[in-house]
Structures are given as structure tokens and as C-alpha cells.
Length: 269
Picture 1 (cartoon, helix red, strand yellow):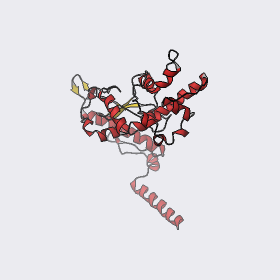
Picture 2 (spheres, rainbow, N blue to C red):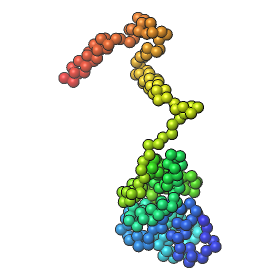
Picture 3 (cartoon, rainbow, N blue to C red):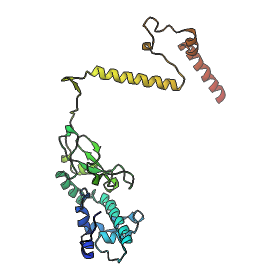
Picture 4 (tube, helix red, strand yellow):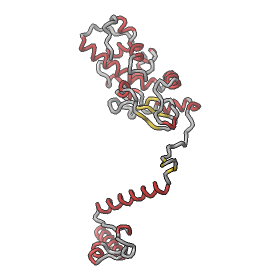
């Protein structure tokens, strides 16, 4: 946060909100109307979330006149920024707040989607949680419907709760015409100009699934053998006596299952 050594105390308190939204790193925020901030109904429950709540509110609403030392002033300033962020999350889902954020969205103030197939579509800030101190703000692209980290380190430290999890969805509910058409364009990997055959991708997927199945069977002491595990097709099903004893066939398995079920029913009775 920038110092105000060059400003008088009067300037410091008279233009706090203007200063806050115009400071580097706070470009994602819009200015909250004063009448919204002075309506106590809109601040319900925040007094328990913010330390020095009343002093912070006085600072945000430009009526702060406490002669505090530098340490206390710094604490109040920190609380004021936190309070403004929490109120901001509530304000931007109101009619007036949506209109202000819409203007910033139209100007791409929040950045553009880094995905090539989205052709630089404008982004919207979104939080992964409505609770503070959980995660930082992300950027949502309405075209590919995915989220990204902000490019600037100034923005990547902003709390995601200052924008909430519902803002972007409410915006397009109120302004449905702005919701972009979804594209089915996807990047297609090629080798020397030729598409990678879909069957090859399917085969790789099946191989991975088979290996995963073998590991899961081994975890429960089932040493199953696939045909490909044999040296040739001729001996694919020629198991030795030791293997047969440790791996009973379907008939023996069914008998063991029946015995187990019968024992369980007897115990239940």
C-alpha cells in the first residue's frame, strides 16, 4: 500500500475510496456508492469479521477523525481495506454494482483469456470461496468456462472473497445477451501435419487403464494375468499347478462365494 506522506490528513480522509480504487493493484475493484456503505443493513455481520470495525468504517466513509499513532493507524487502514473488500463482494451483485463491473468487463479491465482458442475474450474476477483468507482471486472466461490465475503479482494476492463465487453467474443472468457463444474448437495435436490417430489415443488410454487395474487387483492380493502377460498365445491359458491353486477358477470362486454368503446369513440369524 502506498504512503500518503505527501498528502495532508484532510486529503487522506476525504478521498479514501477514490484513492483505493485508483491504486495500483486494485484495478479489479469498483467504487462502492456512499449510500450503500452508510446503510447498516448492507453491513450486517461484518462487525465480527473486521477488527477496529467502527474506525475502519469511518475511514471508508470519509468521517475518520481519530488522532491515532502510526501503528494504530496502520491497523485501522488494513481493516478498512478488508472491510471494503467484503462489502465489495455484496455490492457487485446489486443492480448498480453489476452495471459498474459490466463497464469494466466491456473494457477488458480484468484482462483477456490466455487460451488461444478464445481469441482474447474478456475475463471476470471470481473467488473460489465466499470466505476470506481461503484462496486468492481467479479470472473466469465465459467463453471456455475455465478459470486462470491473474498475470500480475499485484492482483494475484487479492482475496477471492472480495468478489465471491456467484458474481459472474449473476452478471450473465441479468445480461444474458452478453454471454458468449461456446466454441467446440479444440487444439488437435499433429505429426508432420497429420492428426494423431484417435485409435492410438484410445489404445494408450486402454493400456493405462489395464495397468491401473493390475495395481488395484494386486492391492487386494489378486494376481490376475492378462493374455498379453504370457510369452505366446499357445500358453496363454496354460497355468501351472501352483498358479491354479493360488488362482481358483470360476467354479471354485463361485463355491467360495456361496460358502461365505451362507456363513454370513447364519451369523445374522
